[in-house]
Length: 485
Image (cartoon, rainbow, N blue to C red):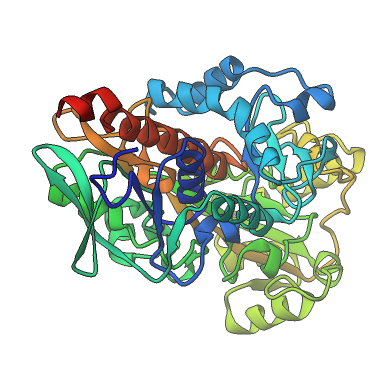
């Protein structure tokens, strides 16, 4: 590789995408500097379940699931109404088939067994896939990051923690390095993997205005380094952005302020009704589609449950326990009434409609078959019984369900099928690549399923690192060229 630069590649951000880029380039023999603004590696990947969506893998084959990247591509594009970029998406799907082998070779454990949730290692239904594609690693996102970081260290990739990249250096239309605290580090290639913008309220308001629906109930579970640094880079260098207005908002109760594994889960025996009092959805609809369903009903719905459901809530959680529900009733956040008719008045929906909706719900789940919204299939995928207790034991409760948990944002630097960043006139900038949430074009309005963003980070990071290493090799003078010089 060329010795005329400080490094062959500088990677900005040491989350899943940045680690993957650094490792991939290091495997190709490149001299890599990995720069992280925070005091530890991992970013939002470390905070996640580590789930990876992928097609045509050895794990799928081992449990009898037939799949292919072509099938994943068709499903992915159709779900997003072909509004994402076909070239990068096809690359993502094709490269996903080998990303599982790649991470397992690096020490990540993904057993060939069926998993019923995003925290049980194995193959899981993780959204609205046509076949199961959610690969759950042992030890979650933390374990995934630790394995990647060990690989980074083995390859001799330099790591600079607590160092925030101020800008990318571009000379004569090509990347020439980065600026860190006023110091220039030269490199012919840079990978922007600095995360999304969820931790920057001003940018969230600008690029994901749907968050306004949640109001004060909005909370962010992304890493604190997700400040949207790529937005400033785009503005300074005339780079194209893609994915404005898109991101992942999970549906949570109005009183929740933590991710559900800390917050707890609402009672299974609950019905979601819109402001007209009618049941309007599968209450366990995957988060790939549930925010869109709420959008069709004014942005939020009511979750209605009864006293038996409240008392059956397990202890040990922050937000969904019997006592916490009572506390929120006292605050007026959760509504309570002795009868369904009175509850209807408290939430301003037609009493007759609400009573009819609950009656229908009870009839369906007494049989274990939800003819209306097919929730029994969602419950079965989780390994749960679809014979639910009737909502019939007063007093009754109602709480607003909102798209209030901001997980990730999808406005990123537009990339092509080689992860090269595209400028505002459609030209790929030589030496500039992007991966993870900082890359736009693959993550769409509809989050395809659990593992979409983590797989996207690792796949694009791996491709970006490989592309950057190949560029550095091409710029290295051959022995003949050196002699003639």
